[in-house]
Structures are given as structure tokens and as C-alpha cells.
Length: 409
Image 1 (cartoon, rainbow, N blue to C red):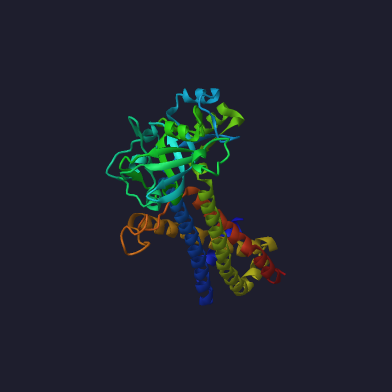
Image 2 (tube, rainbow, N blue to C red):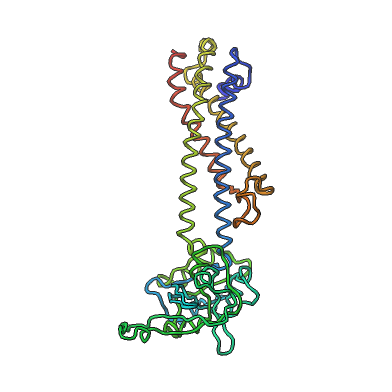
């Protein structure tokens, strides 16, 4: 392989008898480099959006969530859950009761999800970072039950975060048919007061649907004393989430499901993964088109070096070696384009990451973020490099094999 590689390298970098061949070779390298840089940038932007969305959910979702596989509720003192509660790697263990209810206030109605949690919810999540208002995060005080509502829920009810009158909360009584003569008798009715704060995750599935309150209120409202719908966990510092998740799965067996943050928002991240995959496929097709320039360059080179091929054959080079010369040149063009494209793509990503050149608009704060987020993944760079090499190698194999038949005959 040393002889074909040496000749291929000479052909690639030396001046050809026809300047057009040098130009087309340069265009081939640039085409592959631009397509490669586009792949790096697009995949990194999708990673940036995924990290941004994950950051928004971090303030509300726990690191790990344990839910029953069958049914909605499970006993809070279940033997397996009690064993989990004593695990030395768990820093915060929070019981949760979550179900749907109807809110009525200000002559308006809205269906929401009431999420009753333990008082240690502040330690479980970063809820204090997304509070909106002048109060503090508080779930109860003496005989009052507080409800910390999403900003979207308050808007639907036409209420400020410091509403004075309590919100009426309705939930159907269990195993009881609605009395049409007096439907209100078929509902449990409770009241929630304002702690003068709401929360804003900047995601409508939370801001427009959720109300946080204490777990005793939720159990009383839904008639589920001693029950939970989930257990939410925060691990101690330094504990690996993936390893701990596997350990908890083994501990709880098939009765419970253990979800990390990505699995808790599976539908959201699944859509983002599909979008990223589709973009990758489209850009790979563009890369294939760019590789056609390599075929044109090699075609002209084969014609230009026809006499050289005859000389090499006369001095002992076999057909396979002559074919490999042109094959290696096409692969070297792909390799140079791949490396150059990755370097360019990484440079553009760093510029965007630190300077935010491409922005969403001229007005600061009009969106959740002001510039396109970028997050470079090593695995994406490896994927792009392998993709470019495979596409480049495959695209030149058949054309070169066909075009060199006449030369080496």
C-alpha cells in the first residue's frame, strides 16, 4: 500500500497539467468540509436546545422518580419503599400525591393537576429559583393550606400571585356516582390560599397545569390517606445517577418503575431526538451530493494520468495498485475535508457559545434565551467523522473502479 499511497499523495498535492483539475480538487475538499461543518453545528445546536430544556425541568423534576407499574396509588409504608427510604445514598426522599382537580375562582374554572408534596420539596428541587412574587415557598401554616400555582394557572383564573380570596378545589369522591339533583354533594371541596408566590418553569405543561400544595391536603382531597402516587428522590453529592438508578431497580423489582429526568419528560426529548435524527439524515444527503465533486475531480485526474498508468504498469505495478492510487486520492480528499470541516464546525460552535452571534431577535429578553444554544458532544463529532469517511469512501469506490478499467486494460 506504500507505493499507491505515495503516488496518490503526489497526485493530490502536486500541480496538474490542467489547472482545472486543481480547482475541482479544491472545490471537492471545500464541499466536504462545508457539509461536515454544517453537521457539527446543527447537531451541536440540537444538543444545546436539549440541555436548555433539561435545565428548565431541573427546577421542578427530581433526579429520580419511583412510580408503581400497575395502578396509580401505592401504600406509602410499602415494605420496598421503606427499604428505599433508608438507603444511605439518598439525600432527600419525598412522598407525592398527584391527581386531577377542578379549580374555581373569580367566576372562572380550570382543570389542573394538584401535586401534594412533603415539606422537604425545597431540598429536592430548585423550586426557589423559579418562584414569582414577593412571598416565600410555603405549603401550609397552622390551619391554612397554601397552593403555589403555575403562572399560567393564575392567568387562566384571572388572579395575581397574592390573591386574597381562597381558591375552591373540587375533586370527585371515590366510588360514588354523581347526584344530578345536587352535583356538589358528589365532590370533595377544599380551599387553597396564596403564599404570595407562584412558579414559572417557562413550560406550559407545568405553568398552565400544576398547583403545588402539601401532601396532607392532597390526600384529604382525593381520599387517599396513607397512599402515594410517586416517590421523588435526590441523591447525595458524588453519587452517580445512572448507577443508583440501576441499584434501585434491582431493589424494587418489577413492582415499581424508576425514571430519571429524561424519562420523566420522555415525549419532549423523544421529539427532539427525532428532529435531530431527521436533520442528520438530510445533511448526510447533502454530504453525498458534495462527494460527487470528488468523482468529477478523480475522473479528470484519471484521464490526465492515463500515460502515467501505462508507465507504472510497464515498470511492474499491477492493476490493483494502479486502481488503489486513484481510490486513495478520493479517500484522502474525504479525509482532509472531514478534518477541516470538524475544525471549522468546532470553531463556529465556540464563537456562538461565547459570543451568541446568531440571535433570536434584536430585543433582549423577548425569548427564554437570546441566542441559539450550542453544546458540543464528543460522540457527535465521532459520528460526523465516521459518517463523512464512510460516505466519501463508498461514493468513490464504484466510479473509480469503473473508470480505471479502461486505463489499466
